[in-house]
Amino acid sequence: MTSDQRTITNPASLHDPKPFGYSHAVAAPGELVFIAGQYASDATGAAVPGDFAAQVELALDRLRTALEAVGLGYEHVVRLGTYMVDHGPDRLAPLGKALHARFGDRLPAQTLSGVAALALPGMLFEVDAVAVRP
Image 1 (cartoon, helix red, strand yellow):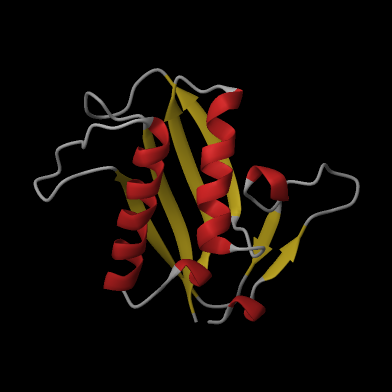
Image 2: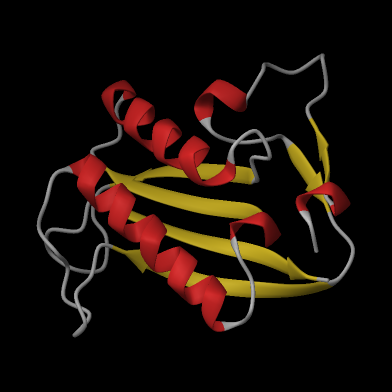
């Protein structure tokens, strides 16, 4: 599937979500593929320490690796679930920047959840995805 096969809808009656790194609705033909939560991890699965922005970058790289393992790429992603510890406005800019770097203007739908903690000590960010295989 190319990104042109996705239909992105951002109704004028809702706020512009693009600065925040997502689209309100994304429709795509094909088979759904679910990618489990990815985080800043080493080869053993241990959380890699680092600041929030560094963890976002590494988690999104891990997401790309998982997508590529099933023959897909960022262009196939229609929905993200993002989870951040200590959510605050200062964390939105690095997340938005990282998402725009990977998705450009074809941003998937996204739900961002602020959480008290994630699965492992030191984890500050996690992302899961739904992609569509053409």
